[in-house]
Image 1 (cartoon, rainbow, N blue to C red):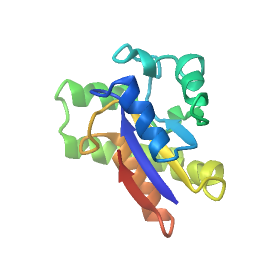
Image 2 (image 1 turned 180 degrees about the horizontal axis):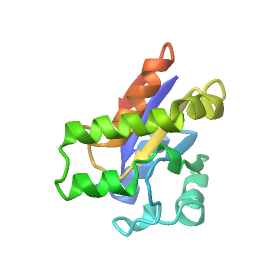
Image 3 (image 1 turned 90 degrees about the vertical axis):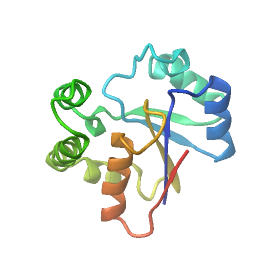
Image 4 (image 1 turned 60 degrees about the vertical axis):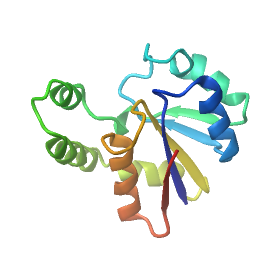
Length: 148
């Protein structure tokens, strides 16, 4: 399986959708806590907006809030109450506690050859989409991660 990851900040709608189409993405898994972001109009609204736009390039949309960090973890990091390494520890603990990797395996492994995890951050270095992809890679054999 290939796990792609993508952030929408600093991408135009054209760049975002062309990138997904170019890589043959058939399902976009939105792992944001809130999928009604005002930061980018094309990523707003889940099934209502983004889901419809993705359908135009034959791509499914699903929002999996259980793969997102909690509001507290996010706020603590944004307000500099915790460092990035502390964020990683808290997020990884949360994912284990929620059994999110097991859910991912049940929902997507063996059904799709590739998936794409969506979040807001423009790069994966300090984004939970990278952490979640790595957790999946630790559990499954033969997983490649590609950050778009």
